[in-house]
Image 1 (spheres, rainbow, N blue to C red):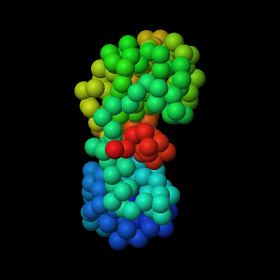
Image 2 (cartoon, rainbow, N blue to C red):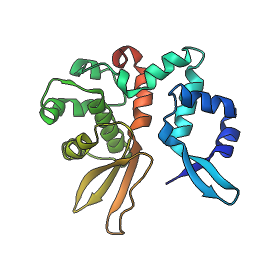
Image 3 (cartoon, helix red, strand yellow):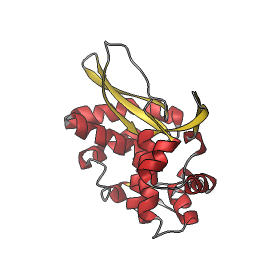
Length: 209
């Protein structure tokens, strides 16, 4: 797990101790991201590096446009609209347009929960980074849905790996990346919470109640 200490986090971002814990109280930063670990100086607080840096950047970028209460509402997974239509998803640049045609078949409906949107965006981004064909991307989404649905939360890490001449995805609690043996080739790891932050802030009118 790639962690960053509280001291380094405050130094890199320029925020204060008070801001950090106020944002925690306001639910802008998930409590589970505050990880206590033993260190030579005693117990110290660490954070999942990529997730916390991305979240703080989002907060700093948006804090002059929205109140902390409004930002908490935007970033909270509970505030997403009930379902998103296929037509609305055409506006989301983070989703490969070639994958849209299989969504009704994969999810068995014509409109989609925000978690399903986040999963589709994650598979789209992984496919782009790895260089998957349209067919491989669609098959990866089909394989991913069962494991992803068992989590039913965006606070997970999506790990795409290659084995048996096929691409697969597994989902683990964020921020706890999985480790595989040497016979499995890990291709990409994406945080669904980072993806949801980006989508919610960028397409607020579509995804926030």
